[in-house]
Image 1 (cartoon, one colour):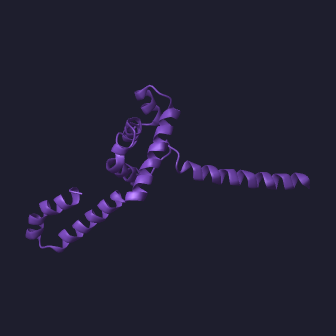
Image 2 (image 1 turned 90 degrees about the horizontal axis):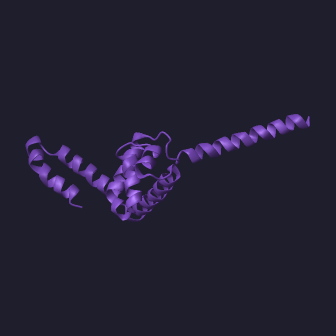
Image 3 (image 1 turned 180 degrees about the vertical axis):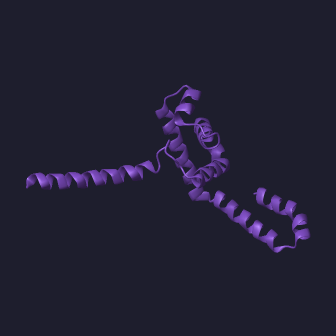
Length: 141
């Protein structure tokens, strides 16, 4: 009887461990990431990249823009895979903090969406004439 109880507790512990690993793996580098998440991180890097250290910026750029693995980035910089992981983790954290405080990427997306909606409302010939002005408004920020 105690054996059955031990097995039940062991299964519970394994389930909890698996849930923890699954939650942890959502944010671990090297795992499969959705295209939307990669694009979002790339946009944040474009927006705030110059605020990061050179190493963080380069590691994140190679990962998100060039689609290199951690091992390839480590080999490129002649550092350990763990050092690349740490630089990326800290850089990602900084990007998220900047976006949470400043919302520049979110505002750019809203402006772009509003500009697309505005162009869609205009007649074709006016929309063509308005495109350069709308582009200036979007990119000028």
